[in-house]
Image (cartoon, rainbow, N blue to C red; front, side, top):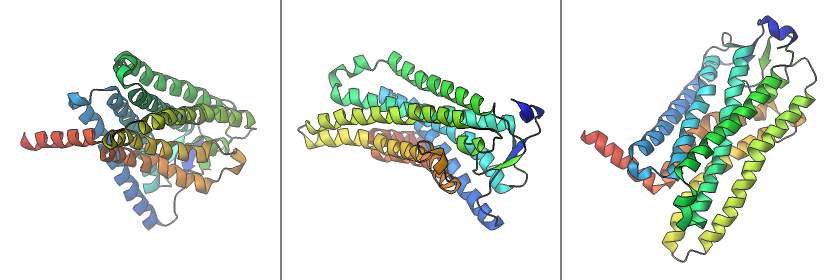
Length: 312
C-alpha cells in the first residue's frame, strides 16, 4: 500500500438500499432467506452426489464442485451485506478487509465461470463421443480441470486485487454497492486508474468472453449431435441434461457481462446494485433449483435420500 493506505485508518462503508428502517429490515429478511436457501440447496446437492454411488460420474463431480463454489461465493458476500443492511452506520470495513473480500469474490466468481466452461466440455464429450466418454473424461482429468479452474481464478484474483489496492485511497468513503466490487472501489482512488481499468477488461475477457465462446462452440456441436438422434426419448434426455447447464450459463454470464464488459465510463451504480443482487443472492438460490428440477437422476437420488432419512 502506498501513501495514506499505510496508515491503516481508512475504512469504507456501504451505501444503504434505503433510508427507511422498515425497508432495510424487509431487505435484510429477504437476503437472509435467500442466503440460507442457497446454502441449504447447494449443500444438499453436494451431499446427495457424495452419498449416492450412482452419481459418481464426471458430470455430477463437476456439479458438486459448482455447488461447493456457490456456497463459498455466497458466504463471501452475504454475511457482511446482512450486517450492513441491519445496521448501516456501524458496518464499516477496513482497507485490508475490503481487499480480502474483493479477492475471494473475484477468485470464486472466476473459478465458477471457468468451471461452467469445463462442464460444457464434459457434456460435449458425453453427447458427441459417447463411446469414448469414460476414456476421455478420466477421473484424473476431471480433478485436473476442477483444480485448474481454481488455480486460474486464484491467479487472476491475486493480480487484480494487488494492483487495485496499491492505489492511494485518501480518506474513508462510501462504496456505491453492498460489497467491495472492483469498479466501485476503483472510483474511490485518488489517482488515475486507466491501467487498472485495462487490466480489469483483460481479466473480464479471460473469465467471461473466452469461456462463453468455448461454451457456445461446444453447444453448436452438441445440438448438431442431438438432432441426429432418431428417437424422441433420446433427444429429450440429451436436451434435459444440457438445458439446466445452459440456463445457469445464461444467468451467470449475462449478469457478469452487464457489469464487467461495459465501458467503465458507462458504469451505473444503480444498475450495478440491481445486477449484483441477481448474481450474488438470486443466482445461488436458482442454481440448485434449476439442476434438481431438470435432472431426473438427481431428483430420484434426492427422493431415495429423503426416504432413507425418514425410515432411519
